[in-house]
Amino acid sequence: MSYQPQDGDVIADKYQLDQFVDEGGISKVWVGHDVSSGRKVAIKHPNYDSTNDPAIIDESLRSELEILESISDAGGHPNVMTLIEGMEHEDLLFLVVDFIEGEDMHKVVERRNGITDPGDIRRVGIDLSEAMSFLHQNEIIYRDLKPDNVMLKRDLTPVLIDFNTAKGFEPDDGESDATSGTVIPNPTYKPPELNNDPELIGYRQGPWSDVYSIGKLLMYMLSGSGVRKDAVDPRDFPGTRSVPAYLAEIIENATQKHKDDRYPNATVLARVLESRDPQPPEVGQLVHLQEGETYEIFPGDTVGRKDADGPQASITLDDPDNYISAVQVQFDIDENGDWVLDDRSLNGTWVNTGDGWNRVLGSEGLERLLEKGEDPREDGKMPPERMVIEEGDRIALVHPRYGVWLRFDG
Image (spheres, rainbow, N blue to C red):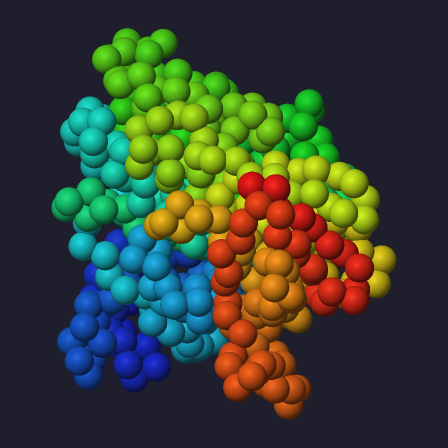
């Protein structure tokens, strides 16, 4: 490309480049400011000087813009980088994001020779898990969690940056996607299903993949160096043997080789860190009434259509007519200790608590119905986005007449 950004350049008459910061295989990063308000910002643009194919660079940066736009549309998260805007200037794509006062995790850990306070490790782990839960709820897996991609503020609050390898959940098609996009195998922080492990060909990636990487980051903070093995127990390494037993067991569970042996999602990982108890929180059961199958569910788990082209749910059901959404519902436990169902579909979900069927309709489904000119109100009231459920309640995906029913068995 002919245009090479320089110090002092003003992008699209709005943002001035003040100082070059760093570069990677996909992008270059500058510190700049908004010329009208003086607001400090970070600015990214393609790095065509790298050895990567320019087409891959363009695809990755545009994918990052789309992911950041979807995060903004979902309301954002305090532990996730905030997009201000994307724009074209001199035929280059520029991403303008909030400037984060702090340093990347690698620099902080290297300077301190590890972060040895278990309380600090635990707080960072909870924040990262909650950020990942937010991404997973919005059908995004991060896929490239490593020290360089986490900024730490002065109080060690983490902020996820660099979303050029993030993407939607994978369909369960029996094929490995470990090397799709720009994801490069990295045995230190990436889980085996993203590292071409021959034993795990066909293992799909999902929330459990990011759980593994969080566990590896917690170990990195404790030890000051990356550990290239699965099922990492910090007590096996000199310098970290005094780590509390609960934290050591959580890290070991999160970094298991097989996804079925890890915590199933980042919501569960946050809960065990909060409680200082490596045992997962309460487990519920769902019975698929038409098929007679029983499934365990954890807080944060989802149910959706099998073989969907888009995001993949924790529990997938056959749906020959394709009316069930890829992610139809999500389960959680609220502050009162009650199980709740959140609708995340395009068409709604129905729950029978013993007094008839009641519709639950998430914001995306509500918006879709309103755009179609349909009125989802019942008795003048909009249906709720979530509902408390109890043992014996029945759940109808799409509609009671559709014939895909579940029973919640507590």
